[in-house]
Image (tube, rainbow, N blue to C red):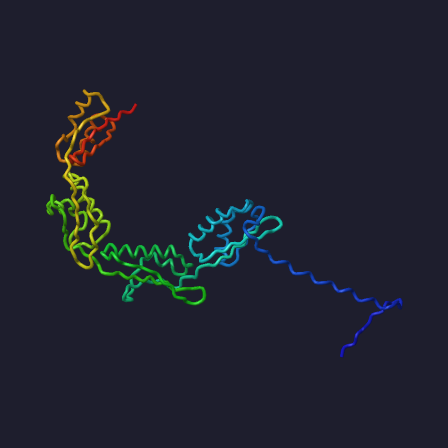
Length: 346
């Protein structure tokens, strides 16, 4: 049992009264979020919560330009978008707090998990080799843009081998706290191999000549289907027809085959056109007559685009001037008149 000792003043006076208790200070009020349109003043501080030290500093650095200025929500959205684009960020939330000396931006940062393992497999589950550069992904914060770049490269590799329907997706599997395993899953479909070239609707163009027009530059028999080569072959077929008077020719995109099959170009030729009046304008009659010697086409010829282009180039070289081709199409007579307009710089 403890004794209570009362200390009395040496002079024999009464006991000193106990001190009055000091009331505790009320806790500081938590910052209150304020509606964006109610915030006043300039941005004076940026607080970042969550995330590693490096990403938190990066967020502050990106938003540093907002300090000392009135709140600009459009610019703020652009800044946040650039942070997302840098990768490694899963979510960003920003609220505004009204302080006495301005606006405080409170940023909550949620980072992507770290990549524990990175691999690729085909539809059977067999591993697919990734390029050496893919090694940098392991240990990094997950960056969807970077993963998409590897998926795109893998898809393009299969496209170049004729797998026109290839699909590539990446999936995540938890691998402990703040970590995931990333797997690219590829479904190649069936490879398309061009067996031979076929043509439909080519009443005025022998298949042998169309085949020669395409040559060995695209859709070579025995090669895999590639969309860019198919488009090039279509343009070469059109170019052949433009040089044989069929200026309204249409070539339908070939149906994409499965497996080994012919590629079939379905052609709508249109009408055959001849040249109407051919003349030179923009200069006097005597000069026009002199320049006409450079023109290698005449009225009544079958329209030939390459011959028109060749005549234009000869005029440019001989006269050292610009030449503008002006055409006049008569759909009833099936003619195309052409004027080579000489443009002389003043």
